[in-house]
Amino acid sequence: MKLSLLFIGLVILNSSVCAQNRHHLLFEDTFEGPGALDAWPGHEKADKNSISISDSVAHSGRYSLKFVLRKSDPAVANGKRAEVARKPEPNAKTERWVGFSVFLPATFTPDPAPEIIQQWHDMPDLSEGGVWRSPPFALYTQNGHWFLAIKSSAKRLTANKDLLSKDYDLGPCVNSQWTNWVFHIRFSWEDDGLIEVWQNGKLAQTINGPNSYNDKVGNYFKLGIYKWVWMPEKDKGISTTTERVVFYDDVRIGDEDATYNDVAP
Image 1 (cartoon, rainbow, N blue to C red):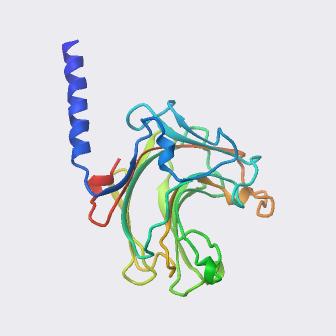
Image 2 (image 1 turned 135 degrees about the horizontal axis):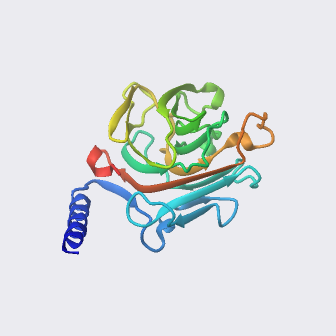
């Protein structure tokens, strides 16, 4: 019993030290306290069960954020999605550090049709004739692999047809365990753009160059599932699944002065 109490005490002490050592955070959500979802201004869901706080799995503490998306769900914001969102960044050229954990359950089988798991979405200049486009930054899964899709354009008031796009294979997905992600992003439509990707503590990718759009307002952070290929007009019978469930935990966003250790799960 004494050894158990000592172990628990050390865990609590180490957790407190880790928390105290985090600096330059703009946002943090571990989904432990009441009203954890209130920190997300945007909620896009088909029903009350699409987004919830769950105690079935957790990366730390007791709870995590659970998303459920079904092919039969009605469209939300012109797509099949269950997502939460933060407010847009004030400036299009913004530097951020982001960390979070993702849990894909055993039921999350490989699918030839992709789904976005996390994205930074653009804010088009609608008052000037701008239109909505695909997100400039999207972490997605397809055929049992993680991918990162980066789109950019230096032009003003662009459409999807104007965008430069490149996808990066980040390796196989692993079910029934947490995958830790850290992203260091310097958003820019010019050559000074930068994206660094860490997966489970290892640097997986460094991407230099344009990675955003030439808009007046910056991108906004979204978390959850977006599977556009389930829309009737885009469904070509490729998808082999009808339901997706994903869990998230330990979400942190740091400013330009943050470091890996400030946001890492």
